[in-house]
Amino acid sequence: MRIGHGYDVHRLVPERKLILGGVDIPWEKGLLGHSDADVLTHALMDALLGAAALGDIGKLFPDNDPKYSGAYSIELLKEVCRVLESRGYGICNVDCTVLAQRPKLAPHIPLMRQRLAEAMGLDTDQVSVKATTEEGLGFTGEGLGIAAHAVALIEKSK
Image (cartoon, rainbow, N blue to C red; front, side):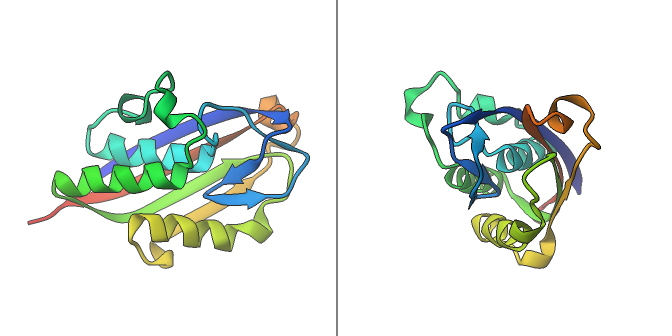
């Protein structure tokens, strides 16, 4: 068994969609990035790749490659899972935390878990997603951005 940790952060800006865990969340701002800037899915991909010692998402999906401009991160997660499977790894479970002052994410978490689980070919009970504020502290607390952490446990097939 192997464990990996992932982290991602993006700035909040007007006139962008807010997508977290593959879910389009209605709000006045969205995350700025080369792809859809889904910090939750990006952190999760980094955790999975890190557990397999395969680098990070920038290695697989460079932000200077026009092919990934506006990419839907759930599709990139599916590719990460194909890479892991080709190396003989299976995913045991994942645990993710989103750090955002606003909007309130609790109503969207069940759908986030479902979308992430489907993309990874897992049962929903293998995917944990939590959200927290930072009590108004730091860039996330001030509403300047959203961050996410993820931990993934994988195992080598026998």
